[in-house]
Length: 104
Figure 1: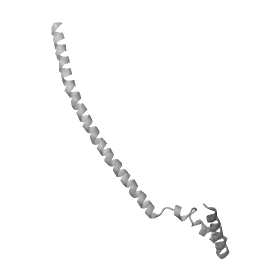
Figure 2: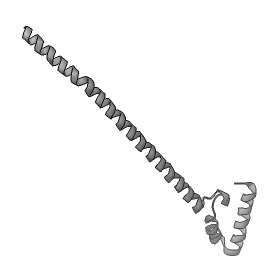
Figure 3: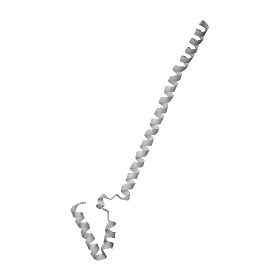
Figure 4: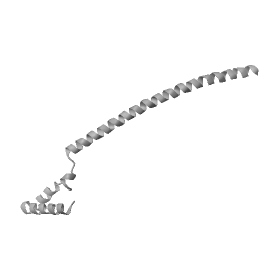
């Protein structure tokens, strides 16, 4: 708070105290913001912030959905690839086992 603002607040308090009394002056001064009015958030400020936050969450949700779709596609591709190599390996292993059993 600037020195001039402090002086202004003190002057206002003194005038209120002279006109209304100490308790009433203190009560009214408590209702003033502790900083300048330029530093107080307005309803419009809060609504703008709310809109920005909602937009940010919507963008994050969209990105998460895109990543989920991409991840599922990659898993599907890997599963197909794994099955393509796993089945011949199992069949080959079984054939070798049968051949070794017949030789013994």
